[in-house]
Length: 161
Ligand code: OFO
Image (cartoon, rainbow, N blue to C red):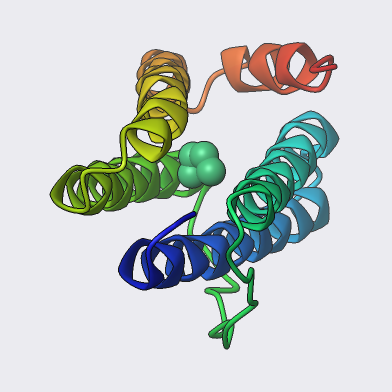
C-alpha cells in the first residue's frame, strides 16, 4: 500500500503533468497560428504524451491502494515571440519537470517504498530523453537562424508518430 505522503506527492505530479499537457497544447495552437503546422503537430503529440503520464501515475496510485486525484490546474502561457523561443521554453520546462520527478523519487526513498522508487525511475529515464530531444531541437533551430532550414525542420517534426 502506498503511503499517504507519497500518494499526495504523486497526485501533485498528476496535476503537474496535466499542466504540462495544457502548456504544450497552448504552444501547438500558437505554432499553428504562425503557420508552422509541423511544429504544431509535434507539440500536440507531446501534449497527448503528457496526459498519458498523468494517467499512468493515476493507475499506479490506484494499483497500490491509494486515491488518485486531479488538483487545480493553473492557466498556462499563451504567446511566444518565435519558434525558437517556444522550444527553449520546452527545454526549460522539461528540466523543471526532471527536478520534480527527482524529488518524487526522494519521497519514495524516504518512505522506504521500493516498488514506487522502481516505478518512478522509469520517469527519471524518460525525462533524460525528453530533455535531450528538446535540447536537440533548440540546437537545430539555432543553426537554422531565419533560413529555410526552419521550414525543413517544421516538415520533419510534423512526421512525428
Ligand atoms: Fe511528463 O514527461 Fe516530460 O514533462
